[in-house]
Image (cartoon, rainbow, N blue to C red; front, side, top):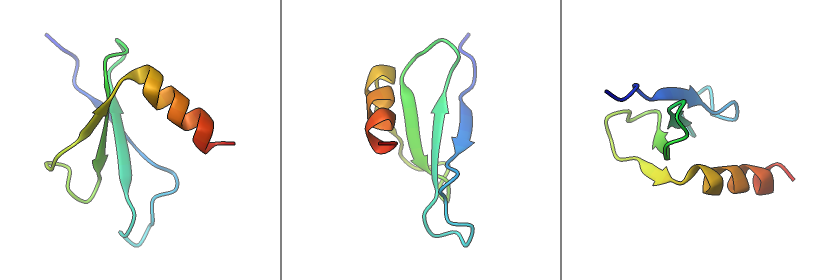
Length: 61
């Protein structure tokens, strides 16, 4: 049985409901899922954890 995704909302999300991004992951380092928090049942973008880590490293420069 797989553990449910733990979703985390971006601290940069617009409190007015405009730009809302969430990322979901599992403790087992499986793929990272990215979705629009305004549409939690909608599609997700799935990336490898190493790719997500590289993206965060680049974005925080």
